[in-house]
Length: 330
Image (tube, rainbow, N blue to C red; front, side):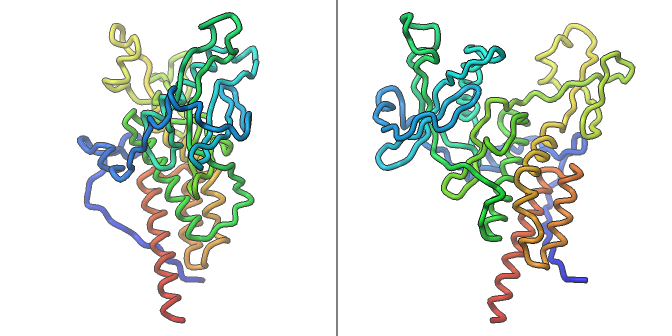
């Protein structure tokens, strides 16, 4: 047997629950929860000064829709994204342009410390416009903050850093759940889409992110019936969701797997980060039980974003208490 610390913080506010997932009570807006997230200068660069960025390295990173160059401006390193020239029969130039622009627009609409910062863009023309010899991918560049790739297996960080990263990622999951665009799901979450920026883990690729819940059929007798993932019950569409269907004119058989998006996000972040950052062997014995219990809940998809943030906060408080107590005893 050994001692374990499990600090609990209690809140008096009542929670509303839909399909087993907690949602923000009516009237409580997202900007109240994340009011400390200051906006940055998104217009620092435009077509008048973007060419003043000195390119240090071209084609540093490539993807289906974009190429990344590394540059510098007034001593600050920056990442400059351009349209990818990668040719693939399944990915037309129109598709790549769509994803490139969607990534820009999603980042422009969202605001969280764990999302990459955009410093501006320049669009002069796209593929198909201009003279016959115009560039294959057009003249379209977006400037982002610079970061380095993350190797989770090679991380050499303190316990405090592990808890800080875990808290940041839990906060990001909460933001996506309560975002101003509705609950967002990122079906392309993978380790390559995160970088380290000044000691903070940030998500950089949002082109496959959306607020469209997985659809389902309300009746199990429907010929196309398929159960929702994670044992979620198919629910009727709400007033907003029904606008984007033909259910306004005919009886609606379609529903939504409400809650699937957040569980999916948590599952992916857990696999990439939490299982490594919160591995009990890196922590004092007094915290191992709480960490093991949390990781078990994550593995079983048995925790929501509010509880996740709270548990990581409590473990952090317990760790700080242990450090303070240890100093007093020395």
